[in-house]
Amino acid sequence: MGWTATDIPDQHGRTALVTGANGGLGLVTARNLAVKGTHVVMAVRNQRKAAAAAEKIRTTVPGASLEIVAVDLSSQASVKEAAGQVLASHDRLDLLVNNAGVMAIGKARTVDGFEMQFAVDHLGHWTLTALLLPALLRTPGSRVVTVTSTAHHLGRAVDVTNPHLEGRYGPWRAYGQAKLANFHFGLGLHRELRRAGAGTASLIAHPGLSHTDLQAVSVQGSEGGASQRFFHALAQRTGMSADDGALPQLRAATDPAAKGGEFYGPLWGNNGPPVRKPVLRRIGRDRAVAKLWKVSERETGVALDVRTPAGA
Image (tube, rainbow, N blue to C red; front, side, top):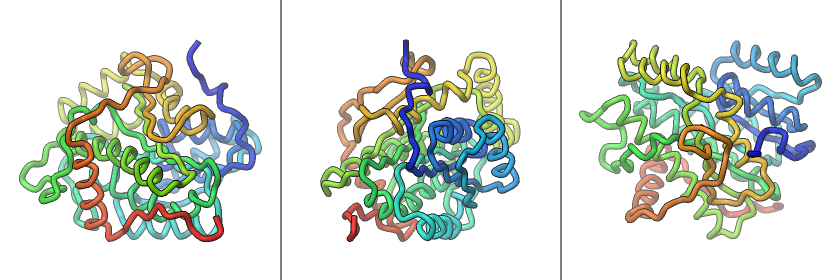
């Protein structure tokens, strides 16, 4: 029998922050962590939906320990404000789940002038992770789980000279780039943490084809694009439930046997129980990670410092 949410060990005394915890995989992740006793910080843009999601969790998990923090990952100012709020309330952080994202939407720019998918899926999480690292590094056994997609196989490594795809934008091209950035970020963060001898682990997960709000938002954001409608229909007919789709990130987050640098996904391509996936060696991956670090630091103005803070 495969790994299920019942295999999550007791999480009392632990604190986790989950982005996009108001729906889909994020909500399932938050609920399952709360069931096991985690204090869950729900980092969500839409506060009305966040409140509704928290109430939904409490109907099935009476006494759930929940906290809502407003964050708009498309805005660097919002991310910095949210990180400051979390650090003011929590000296330690056991788990950060970089879950939120958008998929194959029409061309759009953020308030900072960034391409929307790269900004939300990667740059927002880059800054959030960098700013929360002091709390993570102070916490023995802490983890960062970054959620990617099988679409990362279709992505191209970020172009240092054109990370926002000026003159080259396509909804799926941008999505592939963003999800490959998630994959490279998880691996690059693992490398940096290992070099520094830090106790924090970086892991990666992908949900497979899951029926969540992501596909519906993709259809709306692309103004009814044909390919977006196709994947929405496919997810409705053959996709896993959000409960099953969240299992890879939950296993990466909580399995005592999981280790930094590992990648979790469904057993059978886009379906099945979560298993550890091999990270195949790729020529040029180190260069791709280095490019991502350069672009991320340049665009956000935020360096990712993995040195253990004083007092850890």
